Image (cartoon, rainbow, N blue to C red; front, side):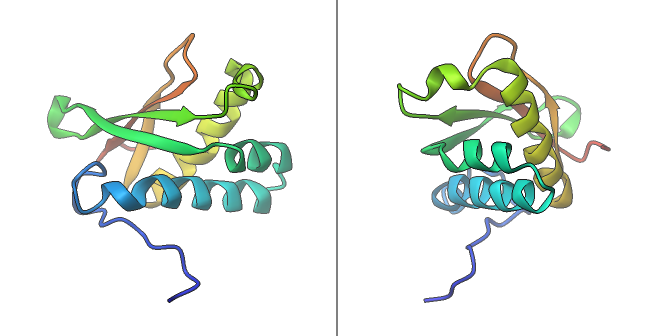
Length: 123
């Protein structure tokens, strides 16, 4: 078994059956490591506290794949994931997805979820 984190096939939709089992761990693991290396230790810790990320295709306007990312956290931690914290997490996830040919489009206000990620869009 390799010590490397398995990556999804970015040529396919992130929620494709072949990718679905890998996407949550890959996205959260890569984002937490990037946040830590950027000196954002509080953000890295919050990402590490997320149980899983649900990534679903939700919009295909303009021939782009739009995804909705929902962070699943323990009920006791839920109140700590406020909009400013989600914005900080989204910034790191945006960087991870952009490096993979994808980008975060917008935030969902009032929800404990990250917004849509789009392929093909510029940063």
